[in-house]
Every structure is written in C-alpha cells, then in structure tokens.
Amino acid sequence: MNLWQKCELTAIYIIAAMLVVSLTSLGTKTVRAYKADAVEDKYPSLYAEKTAEPLAPGQKTVYFTFDDGPSKNTENILDVLLEHNVKATFFVCAQCADSVDVPAILKRMLKEGHEIGLHTYMHDFNKVYRSLDDYLDDLNQINDYIIDSTGYRPNILRFPGGSGTVNASPAMIKQIIAEITRRGYTYYDWDIDTGDSTKTVYPAETLLDRIIKNTKDRQRVIILMHDSPLPKTTPQAVRLAIPALREQGYDFDKLPA
Image 1 (cartoon, rainbow, N blue to C red):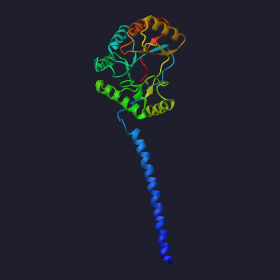
Image 2: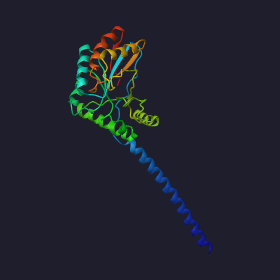
Image 3: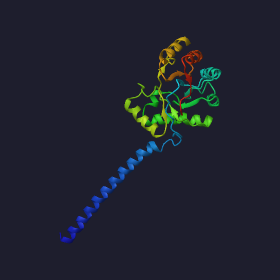
Image 4: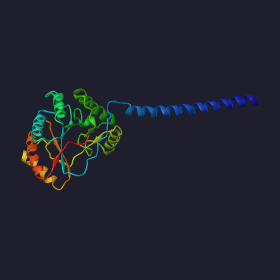
C-alpha cells in the first residue's frame, strides 16, 4: 500500500469515527427531547394560571375542606355553609356523576363564593399512582371536567390520600410534587382529619368532638371532611362546629388559590 492509499484509508477512518460520534450525540439529544416532551408537552391545559398566596398569619382561622364529592351529600353541606355565611374549599372528583348533576353543584359552589380544587377524576388509587403519567392523566381529566362544566380553572389541588399517602411510594410522590409544582399548582394537606371517610358512620357529635379537641391553641386550622355519599352525619357536624369554633374566636375562610 503506497502513501497515498494509506492517507485515503486514514481519512475514511476519521470520517467514520466523526459520523459515529455525531449520530450518538444526535441520538442522545433526541432521547432527551423525547423524555422532556413526554411530560412537559403533555396536557397543555394542566397549568395553573397563578400561584396561591401562602396562608397569612394573624386572625385565628378555620378552613373547612371537603374531599371526594360532589354528591347528594354536598348539597346539604352547602345549605349549612350558606345558612351560616361560611366559605369552604372543595377538592372535587367526578365519581358521582351518574347520580347527581355535578356541573350544577360545581356552579353553585362558585356562585356562593367557595373555592374548588382538583382532587382526582375517579379516585382509583391503583391507577392514579401507577406512574407520573397516570397521575397527570387522571388530574387532567378532572381539570378539563371542571373547566368544561364551569369555565373555572383551579389553581390548587389535594393528592388522593394526601402527600403522605401510603398508596404510593415516597419516590413517586416526590416526582409528582415536583411536576405539579413546576406547573404552578399549590397543594394542600390538612391539620385535622375528622375520620368521616371510614366505613363507620360516626355520630355528628363524635366528629364535632374531634374538631374541637384538635383546634385548641392553633392559629390556623385546615380541617379534612368528606362530601362523598357515605358520611351522612358530616353536614350536621359542620352545623354544630361553626358556632362552637366561633366561640373559640375563629373566623372561617376558603383556602388561598
């Protein structure tokens, strides 16, 4: 092989090597772009329009929050809140859409000055927490449902089971929190769980006792209750709790959104 042939062969090797490097780099960039697109470019309506203001210090305040509705139970709760001029926050689902006019109840909530937050579409833990994409898909369904029903775009949410749920791994929750925070949402847990979501339907007085015992000496209290069909005594518990909490010096408000 003469010198010229050796130079040609060397040049071919160099060009081939450069091509391999270029293709590898391109492939990496393509994979990275695909991974980013898989989350960031999905669900374009699933972005908060603003970030909720933090809970302000000052006046003693109770925040009634209700999960898992609307249902027929919700209308009774709304009647009590209207009677006492109290605003609350509802983290909503669509799981009772076959039995009640959910859009009508959502519109009533907004008309009467309450706050609506995202919760989950059908409240299926096994599906919701299967992956980040499954969680976002479910959240997107309830988000679109609320927007289509009312024209209102929620800025706050509550995770099914809360951010400390045992239904998902800590790693999965951390991943979900990072993504919903990136999308501008504020999520809320609670300070007091009344226990009204169990299979046992407790008397209203029992729920009241749990609320009163756990609100003492607290400045701001987020109370977890449920407006799904089962907790039939929750409306009466709310009716009893409002004057009792006012006697302790509490005002009432909906969560910042």
